[in-house]
Amino acid sequence: MQRYLAATNQRHGIYLVYWLPPEQRTSSSRKYADKQELLDDMRRWATEVAPQFDVSIYVLDVSWPKRQR
Image (cartoon, rainbow, N blue to C red; front, side, top):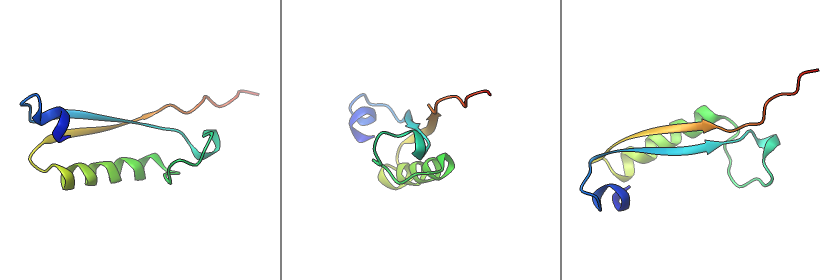
């Protein structure tokens, strides 16, 4: 956050993270099976890492649609 906000002299920003359910991932790159847990951790991280910035965290669910039978 410091790199992209402080470098541009900004205080507000958006942090976008994508999420897939574990069964749709090609590798187990992260531990988050639940997107709400990911969102909570990212919000906590943002306030700890850069409390001087006001950053909105968004989790984009890019999971594949469920098949209709």
